[in-house]
Length: 129
Image (tube, rainbow, N blue to C red; front, side, top):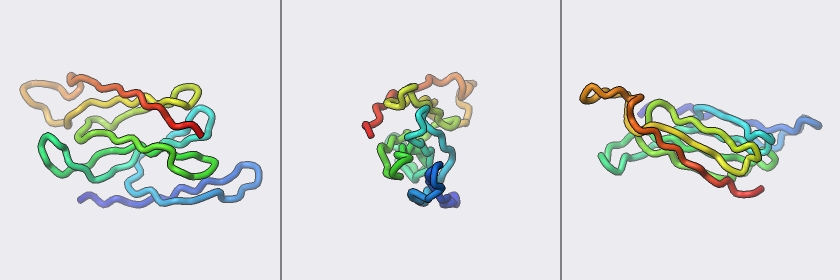
C-alpha cells in the first residue's frame, strides 16, 4: 500500500481570521474552489477494488466541502482504474460539477495509446447549501 499522508485543511474567515474548522484529509491530491468560493472540491485517494478484475487498487473520490461550515456536501466516487488523473470543474453557479477521465491504466495493449481510450464525462448535481 502506498503511504497516504494525511493533510490538514484549515478554514479561516477572511474578515476576522478566526479558524472556522479544520479537518484531516488522508490521500489529498488536489483542491479547487467553486466560482463563488462557497465550495471546495478535494480530490483524494481511497483504497478501492475494481469490480471487473477484483484487484485491490486506488480509486479517487471528490469530496465537496462547504467552506462556511466545513461540512461535506457531496462525495463523488471516481472508478478504478483511471488514467491520467481525473479532472473536474464547477459550473459557473457552483450547482453542478463536470468530471472527466479515461478508464484504464497507462499500460499500452495492442498498440493502443492510453489517450486513444474513450473519455467519460459525468455531470453531478451538488446539493444546495
